[in-house]
Length: 342
Ligand code: SAM
Ligand code: SF4
Image (cartoon, rainbow, N blue to C red; front, side):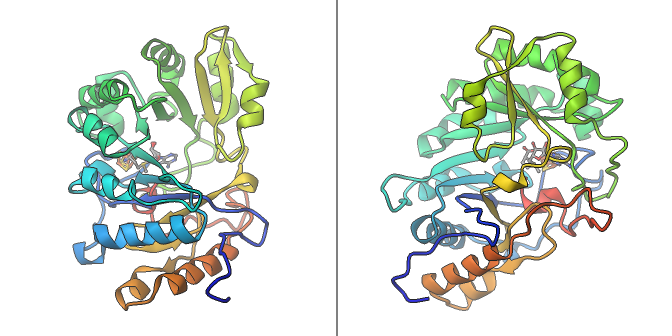
């Protein structure tokens, strides 16, 4: 590859990666049962984590040389990253080749967001996804193993007040725990003015407790919601879906939309435009990858931007066509969701 050849992140199946998901930390202040064990996990040592400058440099290579147009910050819990506001401000100074900053989004459990949403928006954050699985404090305590529902709800209000719209709320339904709450959550989202999206539970928990036979499927969710609401597929939403994972439905004749993300039962791998960077600088082409490409090592050894970009290109070329959860040979990745970045 000559220095002047423009680079793109194209895999061998023709998909182009334009969306970078960066995990800022593997740590978390909740212990959601579908994600982490009660005792937590052996956290990555601090010196293995990318420092802010390293992370901004890698993001800059993606944005300026490789066609990355949107960056989503996640974790673990990204609000635990010290001075996230300053990091967002630095990322907001990056420029895509056509001009303008990349789209900056955050996925968070919302704890502590009440005091920070405005500062994050002022620093350049454009969009936010907040996770909320239940409206019951008792169920929250059971599911997340912490009594923090009020903090999450306050975080959602603050995100709305800060104009981070549309605020999207992610929900994972667990059979026998919160799955009966699905219609109440939709009603709540309508009143609040947030877009609720149900995500099928995936085999990414550290405890390997996921069972296909127990997960609540997209079809079940659709049926549960249809008992109470008229769900209408909107051709405009369908045409605009692109690489978005959620199938969107209009709720009756209201402007409200509800999303169902059928990651397991109707995978959308064929339209995937994502690539992921872990907090310790490993590139992953899929949540379910079993291989990673190290970018931190070359970065710390002084490799130049162009060479790092070329490594990145090679890594993406090898992206597999799908996650293969339904394959008899499927193996869960070694890293849990919290360390990959959801
Ligand atoms: N801590 C932040 C949060 O909870 O939003 C960001 C990281 S979390 C890993 C990102 C998203 O992944 C959350 O919406 C969470 O509910 C979802 N998630 C975690 N484990 C999951 C699993 N096994 N299957 C499906 N979604 C999962
Ligand atoms: Fe933490 Fe998010 Fe995992 Fe829950 S889903 S334990 S909030 S990383």
